[in-house]
Every structure is written in structure tokens, then in C-alpha cells.
Amino acid sequence: MNPPPIHRLRLHIFALRGLAYSVALALCILGLGGIGFWLLDPGVKTLSDGLWLAFTTAATVGYGDLVPSTQASRAFAVVVVLLGLAVLSLVTASVAAMFVETEERAIEQDLLKELRKLHREVRALREEVRLLKNLPPLPGDGSG
Image (tube, rainbow, N blue to C red):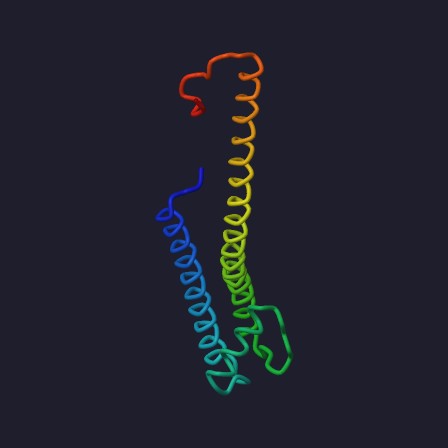
């Protein structure tokens, strides 16, 4: 059965809320990572450089324009990579789930249409068999 519209709306809101939470968490981790690099690494002169280093580290891009230069900032980079990969993967999964949900609804609608069509065909075939055998219709069959 197709879920009622209010149920689908709740699922959609839940998916959007999950995406919002995962994006907020990613921004917090990247922000804290940027501040950490800014405080720990003498090669990171500005907060924006720290944020850039945190993002390129978390996303494992590593352009090389900024790199951790001290043991502390390298150790911190390991933490940023581990947390960043997890959270950025969560954001990607949330977006993918929204696309899958949309595709799933379209497939569900197609299947329901086919099921209704098959139900009508079976009902028509039953009626034909009854007419051929001169049998009365079954109660509650809807044909009669």
C-alpha cells in the first residue's frame, strides 16, 4: 500500500533534518579543525588558511599549498582526516538517501499502477470464467 501523504511528508522532513544535522556537524568539525590548525601550526597565518587546510585535509584532497609542518599539527591532521571523512561521508550519504527516496517513490508508483492493472485483468478473467460456466458471481467480488 502507498503510504499516506502526511507519512511521506514526515519522511521527507526527516530526511531533510538528517541532511541539515550532518551538514551542521561537518561545518562544526571543519570549523574546529580550522581553528586547531591556526593555533597549532606556525605556517598557518590566518583562520581562513586554517579552514582551508582543515577542508583539504578532511576531504583528503591535499593540494599541497598548505601542509601541517609541526608534529602537533600532523597529529591533529590525523584526527581531522578521521573525523572529516566520517562526517563528509555522512553528508554524502544523506544527499544520496534523498535521491534514492525520490527514485523509490517513482518506482513504487509504477508498481502500484501495474498492480491495479493486473487486479482489473484478474477480475475481468474471473467474470469471463463465470459467464462461461454460468455461475453466479461470488459475494464481495465487486462484479455483479
